[in-house]
Length: 456
Image (tube, rainbow, N blue to C red; front, side):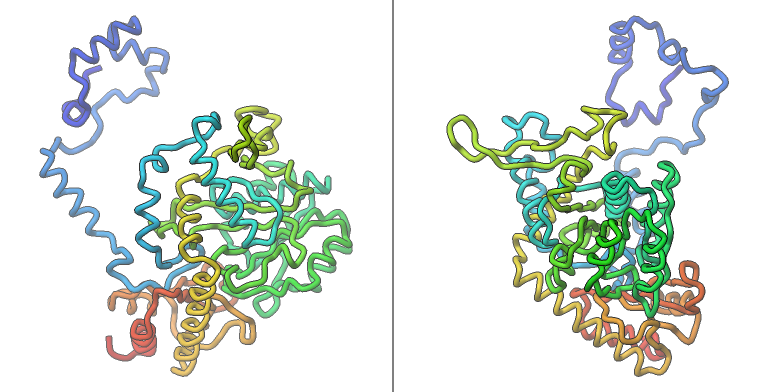
């Protein structure tokens, strides 16, 4: 099989290099190398690709393609729904760009990976402090898989297979839960909400049926509503079920820690603390739990100990449930942690500190309230859930289709909120607006003016 010309331009192996490699493995040609692949599934013609370009021409072409995208340096962003435009100090990128962080991988050999292990340990400590829980793992893929794995923990701990989730949880997370439950034979019930919050009467009715393993509740919810967790853990524990709370690490700068309210497992997506939006990823999922559930947690847990000379050192304390050790017997096959992203989170949280987090949260609360008040005063918007406390996001009902509203905003360089018409059609022209600390009064005023049909 002849190597196409366009490949030879960008792969440095010469014909002599290829010949030497083929000779070393004892095959006469590339075709012979792939002889185990049935001929009927092999491509028998050249790929339909354009002719090769010179390096400068290729660079110009790629810049032209990337220029077709709009980014948050060009647009004023009021879109959230799980990925948020928060300010990230320059020091975060500077530190995580160091080679010892960007090149590190799984710390299987603690004697050679003390820096990586310490960074993970510090991250776990911060997550425990924010969530009010006793132990954190070294992170998960994202918030959705963290939530799903928490449900698996609950099913294993209670030996029950009925799982409850509030309808106010991020719909993508609910879809992931559905996949997990389907594959494991669990029963998943989506509970209704009342005025934007979990319908506690519906929960009580489900608990009365018995055999519930856990409830997953998100606060702030997908709609930005802060749920009232008071007494919730007691009701679930009385029914021998667990409370799993999905939350946001940034929001915990002003909200009471779920662990203080009786949560058994706390999960969420960590994008808001140090990770860029980046077209939706990567970020990381976090998971923290009580000591009682520690041995059922997926992934790995880093611990601190002493070496033979009495010096502090760090080790992989728990990892026996991982695929690389127990394989098909593992509690979970989520094995890798999102190390670079959690280092970024650790740097962000260290730089901000408790006071900085609270200040960011207070700005978010004040700016969200200002934007909502100004929009409602136009007479073109009303709150979908009046009276419900909100953080960073709020659902507004518009007097026009959200698609046309967002189109007008985009023409003016503003990325509008999420159109909920396909997610919650019963709400009508529902608009999920996100206001972070990044937004200025001038930007909010301009949003309001354009949304109300004023000047651009």
